[in-house]
Length: 231
Image 1 (cartoon, helix red, strand yellow):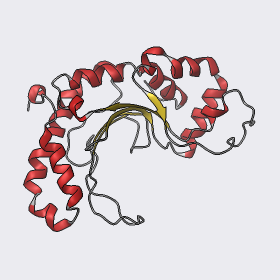
Image 2 (cartoon, rainbow, N blue to C red; image 1 turned 90 degrees about the vertical axis):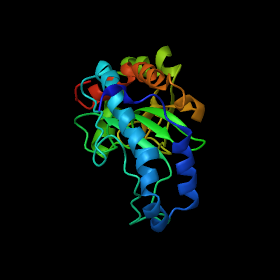
Image 3 (cartoon, rainbow, N blue to C red; image 1 turned 135 degrees about the vertical axis):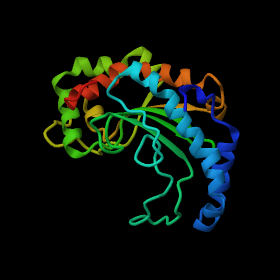
Image 4 (cartoon, rainbow, N blue to C red; image 1 turned 60 degrees about the horizontal axis):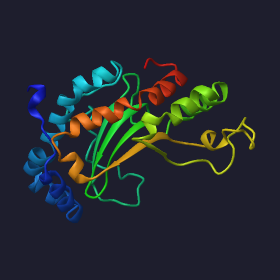
């Protein structure tokens, strides 16, 4: 299918997610599988295909993979093994353009989140493992000027706010009075750009997303350099 097969996300995707939230059970989903295929899966795969050239211009090391399983589109099926909430399906769309050297969501990536009343773009790394987290913190300590330049770049901060969880105290091996202690305490290094449903339903959304991600390149390069992977 050609890259031009995507124009914008449709209201039907959000209607499906709202209805799924009200009927989050396997019987309903089984009966409505054709709706899922047409209203959610197909447009998300089309978006991923169409975004490939934009992503390649940003970096050749991030992947836009339109496979329905194991690609950029995150599974709609929830892992309920250790969760109190046993509802079987996610009621949001997650599209994760991860680094080629990453194996899961806990790696540098560009991210698109779609849900009724909650749409956003993400750039960075969410919940890095202990080894990666230590490498990022060490890079901040070793190159504070480079980190502050990446964190505070006007172009980046015009689009993204840094969010995520933090430790309550200083991480091991760093003093509590470190000048960058707020950043060293972070457990997530992710920038988020909030969107409206109307934004992702606009025909200019793909370009707007690509422009926002392009604004994060210096920040993403810092994270990749810290992890010693190509950016």
